[in-house]
Length: 415
Image (cartoon, rainbow, N blue to C red):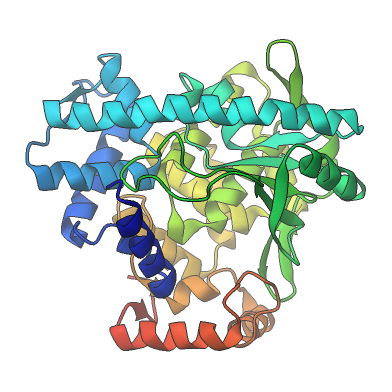
């Protein structure tokens, strides 16, 4: 699928319906779920060291189309392609061909993003701003077999709030423009001023798909009116260096790295991508073995900052994926802190193959609220959004919700 008009129509359908699977109307829910389960099974086998070689045998065009969409949606396409290339996973010729394409574009895309990011980092340093590189580019370079096996659509940079104006100046000087700014969560989105924002493919992460800079001035997430969660000023001091050859860039140190990856993956629980859980397992295993991640420090950080319930879903799924990766006491603490609605959503995501949900529910809208006060604040957020997360405007938002109810694509409870 590389036809720009068709891609545009599918993206419009996604935005209109709120259902990300509108991007692949030719893939049935059953085919999609089976592909998710196949990818999950291979991933589990690789993480747990299965006695027999993991396999991906798909022959028909429809099966391969579903596999390509699921590999793209899960973010696992390039890594699956790498495992096949290295002879670690067996696959039929059609599956090999599709996943080799994912790997080829994954490698090219990350190389392109790194090439564009280096002069941006230079421009920031020239103004005395030394950002912290978050998530994908950092973990891809350090915890994955090669950078191109960890897809990244945006480069996430964290700067202190006082450095925000200087960082904006540097980004402008580096040829970027601000495309969006959030009222809460301290984040702005920047895109190349002269670059195309047209998506080139929906079947793999095309090397020339759009990219941008997400500039953060706080390591936190906004959930609903009166409720945000994050790690405060301490995160700015707890950093490590990632070697980039002649230069280096600051990255999060432990336990903040694990805590933030879990918080971020859990925040987008209903849009779960398996690559984020694989990433979490890899980071925990690597840094536990090296001694840089200690359970007491991670537990203390999550409890003292009040982020345990918000980070727990991803930690729980990562443990179910990796089996024995995380400390049992931490998982039990998180389980006790999780609201009932969040538990139902978590179970739905697992049944879907640790993948994004196609049906939304009132549960996932209210999943973080605990107690009547938070529930009322969360309900008020649904009635009248307090942040700018909805660019449609409140009137059009209500129209979208009514259409979703009429189509039957929204449930009261997760299932």
